[in-house]
Image 1 (tube, rainbow over the protein chains, first blue to last red):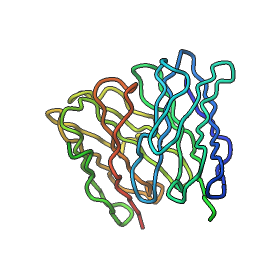
Image 2: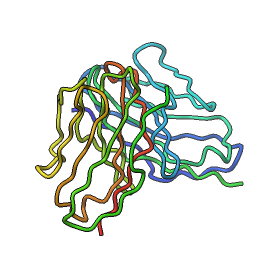
Image 3: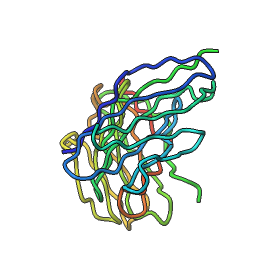
Image 4: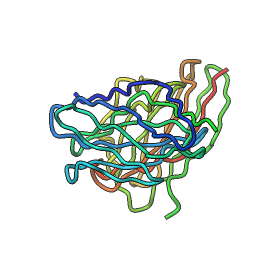
Length: 112
Length: 114
């Protein structure tokens, strides 16, 4: 069965600094991988997805993620943090055709 | 495309009461999912429909929970004899076909059982 581990339940960065949110997955077949963002009292919004095309995936709001099969990782990055990036971020994995399985989430805090 | 709508946004109920939530997916989406999210956790899968057929249910979905999607359009999630442990955010999502496209989530229904 597929699973996701997000390293670090809380990450704090200064405004303008690099954002790095870590995600490792476990899947018995080539996975589809996703990052979602959730603002307080709202649903989840899709940031980006990997579906076996390019290993470097660009998403909305300047975020990108790189699929590394050898490391079973799909870390989320953004070169320069903005105050509006403060939110909770979820990594998710899906076997093709199946439901999404989410990690526990990482809360990103951006300091001014 | 008005997105995925969930109603109500908030529900406070007394323990032992029944509650029902509604989800209206994006109209052309044939798959509809229900997830539950508790504080500090990621969303946990409850069940999903393809059109009107309920194809999978999680072990989290006890006998007190039932979901329907009549005519393959909106869906309802009912919880009978609510317990304090049912307090959570209930999220609905929809997709067109398989999950490789990602889901579109609604804003959720926050249930508080007192």
